[in-house]
Image 1: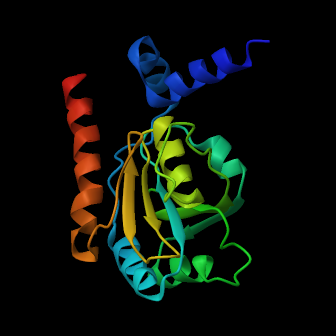
Image 2: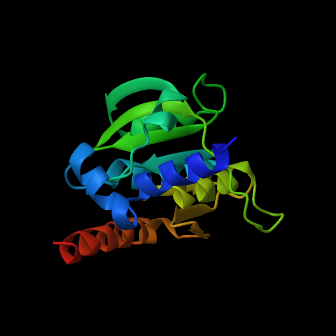
Length: 187
């Protein structure tokens, strides 16, 4: 009966908004969201050239347990060959998203919620899913388009498209800086 309200409540807890911030501080002590981005940058740059579609969720402080549970657990050190092999067109894990947490690929073939917001018709399922997960979490999502090879980054329900590979690290990092600034302000 109250399913939409319960979902909204749980999403607010996951985003650490308002009075729910103390709940997450109590249950969720993951440490810094910063991690080595180089394997992601290199893999996405190479997949962009070959037009290999990819969807990489970089977890920060929000609880993504439901997303991780929807996929196949890997818990492997994040490397360029691992990311490229996961998203290789005929690989069994290529459909869905990869979730990265603390420099490790924790799961692959994860199912993300797609946005219900109006978006341009040119946005494919990967882009809609990237926006969707960032509407309900503080994750940063990197998308490589299978059609164009374009690289996009989603955060906070918004998406930046056609990012040059040499600017990808800076684009991702600026979202980590915002999170760290909020952390300092709340103390």
